[in-house]
Amino acid sequence: MPIKDSVQHKPTAMFGSITRVLLVGILSLTVLYISAIYVLSQRQAVHEIEELFDAQLAHSSNILFNLLGESVSTIDQSSKHLPVVYHGLETALKNGAQEGDGKDSLNALFYEKKVAYQIFNANGKLLIKSGSAPDTPFANKQPGFSRTELNQEQWRVFSMYDEDWDFWLHVAESEYIREDLAHDIAAQTLLPGLVLLPIILGLLAFIIRIAVNPLKQLAEHISKRDPKNLSPINIEHIPKEMMPVMEAINDLFLRLQDAIKREQRLTADAAHELRTPLSVVMIHAQNALAATNDVDRDSALKELEQGMSRISRLLEQLLTLSKINPESIPLSKLNLLRLTENVIAQMAPKIYEAGEEIEFKYNEALVEVNIKGSDFLLEILLRNLIDNASRYSPAGGLISVEVLSTMTEVILSVEDSGEGVTESDYEKLTERFYRQQQNQSTGAGLGLSLVNSIAQFHAGELSFYKSEMGGLGIKLVFKTA
Image (cartoon, rainbow, N blue to C red):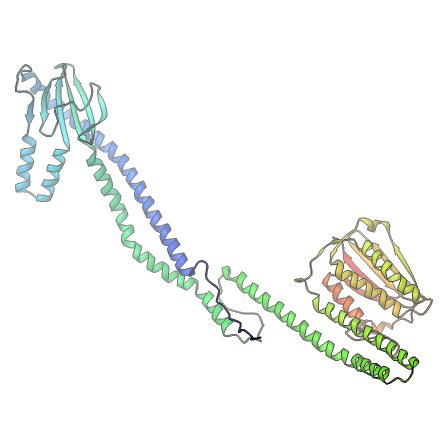
């Protein structure tokens, strides 16, 4: 079958460039902020203008009330030529437009068209009005401020009543003036922000580029690094927000380094220790093939079986040693007493078959005491301790297993009745491939090394002592959960 080349796909960025996201986000917030300022400024301006123009409207109404009051007394209210229309102000404004500044005068003319007044008698007859005022009344006969709509335009009206001459004065002002002024004020507030927006955008882009520069340095540092170099990354002047990223990368490097070392150690240990057993197995296989009778053949096959068992046990121990790391093995609360009982029950038949005895001692308080650990690893630990004690105990010897507890600790002890180990050799017992009584031992010398690794994994304390039976005593102390 043809072998397909593996293609490495680059990851797709979910949010695109950080710089672009920050620029768009901050710019959007800035525009939103400026828009909010514009709306709030316009509302505030409308409120202030309302108060100011209402006061001006009331003041103008009082002036007109005083000026036109006497004119009402001279008007023949039965005349058919009513109402009297005053155009004097408009004429003056037109003359001013010709003589003065054209822009200011046109604004004044515009304002004149948006202000009007009316005077009605008590019977509702229109007596006097300005040139821009309609014939219909601006408001009802109610003094004070009111609003009305004429020709699809809103007007603000101030009404006054003269008791002496019995007439109503309505002075109206188009609200368009107020809205236009409020809009102008808000626009003046908004204008500086709009002018400064490109400058702000440029400064933001510059600042963000400086802020993300350590990310580029980190990426460049990693891309240029030798694949075999798993030492921690060290970049000076790194922002604190990037520290978790760099610490996570360094932690990954350390775990990779540890995994590679464990694989290298497994390979080296297997190559070192399997060389002799494989040679022995090969010799026994050749002997079985060359045997001329059943007795020699059976003897060679039995030796071959024992050699294969030793290789199987060795490989199992090596693989277990290579797997002991916190990332791959979960921890949970467990009862060491129950676990020890189960392991002893499983191993007891083999021990009795070897002509040995095993005893188990514990205190009742352990029934409710737990430790935090891996039942898989602790079962391997117990099996290796009991198996090690069985290997070095003589026929008819005794293996003693004891589990005790204090307020904060659980203590496991395993003793054999063999010849023991000198105190000077205690430190060597946890070394790989070190075997007690090397000429007599059939083990690979990995049992106690495995026990030590499992104890360290569980933050336990391992120690050795001389048992009361003369053999080796092994004690492990674990913290309670």
